[in-house]
Image (cartoon, rainbow, N blue to C red; front, side, top):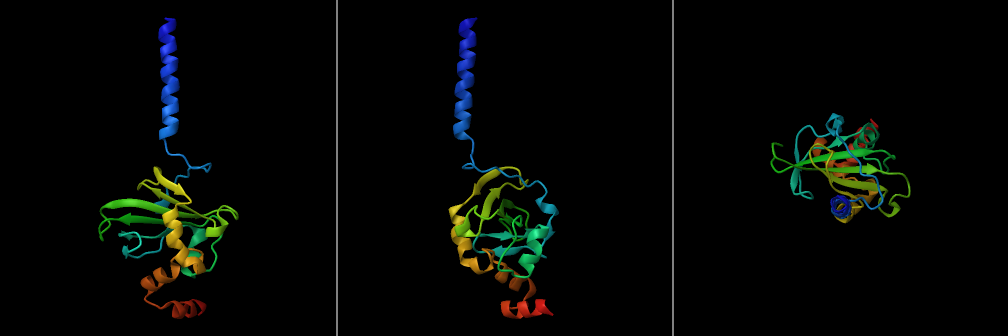
Length: 172
C-alpha cells in the first residue's frame, strides 16, 4: 500500500513538472483571452488582402481604438484593442488565425509604443503566441508615425482617399 501511494505521488510530481515545462508561458505576463472580439466595430466593409500577413483580413476595433484608427491619430490610448482575423481565402471561409494588438500601460515596451501582440485561434481563447513578438514588432516599426498602426494605408484603401486628402476630409 505504501509503495502504491509513493508511486502515485511520484507520478503526480512528474506529470505536474512535465506539464509546467510544456505548457506555453507568457514570460511573466498575464495570458489574455478575447471571446467577444467579433462584437467590436468592424472597420472593413469587406475582406481585404494583407501582403504582410500573407492572408486576407478584416479589422475589428474596440471603442478606444476606433476613433484613433479612423482619424489616423499619431498616438493611441492605453486599452486600445485591434483584432485582425486572417483568412486563407478572399471570401473569409477558411479561418487561419486571429492577430491582436493591445495598447498597454506606459513602460510595458516603450521602445515599441507599448503594444502587446497576440496570435490566437478563432475563439480568441486559445493563445499560440503573445507578448513582445519580434516579427510583429519588426513589421509594425514601419508605422511608428501612426503609433505602430498601418492606419494610413488601410484608411486610404477603405475610403479611396489619399492620406493627405483624407486628413483634410476628416477636418470638414
